[in-house]
Length: 327
Ligand code: ACO
Image (cartoon, rainbow, N blue to C red):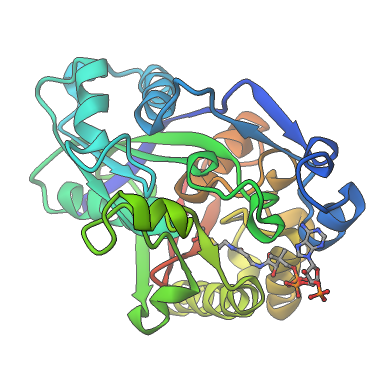
């Protein structure tokens, strides 16, 4: 008897405030045309001053729990993928646990930047497959607007805020997470990072004066690596399950840049209709992008029982990976 983790509920939350490309034209030297042509992004959501990662995560989690037909007391564990936690500690997951009143759950955060959700899903899957736990809550939440340099046109146009959540349940049927494939390359840690605010450059004058609390990115290099690594992890997931791209109903990639997704489609010979895309409305929401896209795909009726879907992500670390799910 094979135990699998099945996704029984999904939910997402996007902050109310919309920041359009036209709005950005007033803030930095850019244009709607440039942003749409180079990234595919038209607008993104921005958290309010009072909203932090745990708030967004809580709203998404509430929806996923309701959608899954369970209650907070059924949850055995909570894993939150984020690189913009409310504070250094305690974990954002413990804050979410408190808000949900999920007293029986253990909770912790996981840091893998934009690949965070796939990493967290993979960890959760191991707990469930082992038979140790039955029901888990996995959340991707990020509030990049708070770590973005709003004077840097190279980065501020790309990111948005949001959260997505799934409830996983132990099942012995054919559906569930079939396999996950994770990769890291720390040699390129400085391709995409936030230098300040940790124990190397603690908050203080040096950090503020040199704007080290903000995201630094080598965009052009990131672009190329993103295409190659996501193609590698997709191929790995297909090969290890004896499948081809034809067997996948829907690809749900990390929503960083439309051109990255188009390049992957071209390399794999998969038409754009088989990719879930919502980055035009939300930009890159980091760890939240895949669970938000998954939630929307389900609600749009793009996934049916028995479909194979493939999630793939790339992010700072560097980290990348894919997860094959039979719905
Ligand atoms: N508006 C107008 N011009 C701009 C802007 C802007 N917002 N940003 C950059 N430019 C200019 C540059 O200054 C440059 O000008 P120059 O030629 O005079 O020097 C020119 O546009 C071209 O710049 P490139 O960086 O070569 O532009 P590119 O086509 O590579 O697009 C982009 C830049 C959109 C950042 C792209 O490289 C990209 O999407 N990279 C991937 C980024 C990414 O996915 N990051 C997140 C990874 S996931 C995670 O872990 C968070």
